[in-house]
Length: 414
Image (cartoon, rainbow, N blue to C red; front, side):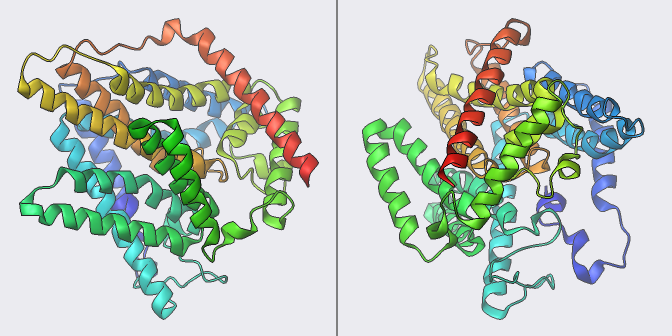
């Protein structure tokens, strides 16, 4: 997790040192999992993600690039491996808290790097601010929007770890401070998607805690407050240049899907048909892998939501105080991960991050959390992919129609 998020191996000062730390670490972790006794591949996400990898490889083959089969395996295969490894490694609530803490700490370090950038113009990595004054980092976080996405994803984890307390209240203050730093980091990224995601996460949390009316009122107030901040969010409108380019890219993505409905134009081929990337993770998958890949990918995300909602809606028999406390923890974890994924989805609606590793690490935590919860509370439902294929197809088609209508409306407003 440290190599993925902090990425010290990619600091410019080490640019001439060719040390494949991340690939070697991933291979060693995969070998350790292969020789371990306890392997769990029962969740639907394993088959859906494996199928999606196959569709990605086929998508480039059917579009005429036969060597792309191996290229896509080498590009997306490590992400699938990371998902499998992490979801199988987090076998207890204690380990889950450990990984959450690692995510929050790494994200906080990136936020502190952004603070130094803002103050001095350049961070300790040697990476400066981008031209419009927004913060950035190295590697996969060299885009302020990606930084904002990570901060939004980590924010609910920081708030939950703070709520757990401990250390005579010092841990509560520590994690709360980390959460505040992440909020400030989001502001420094000036990412409109990340700012909207903060309002959405707050609205969902209030909805679950206080009901839809309170969520609408306070969430709307939060959004209004964000609009008053001096940020790029004030320029958000369908006819604004950046937003207009995004809408045009979404429309072109649908044209690619219409011309290649089954397997799309091929993974990583969007910019071969349009000079801009999709700027929407859903439309990117639809355009590049067609309805087949879109159904698998959307099902992968959908099952993560369903698992967390299943915990929040379930009412198991709780024979003693210990079981009550354990179930309270499971519900709090489910709510935290649900908020993290919701925040990611809001930001991903404006970014092309369908294949980004951070999403699949978060999904791995959700799969692991649900597996741990079912071991302790067997009455939680088991999800059967075989019975859900028709439902997945219907949801995918409905989502495509909904996205198309949104794009048509936005085009009409330009």
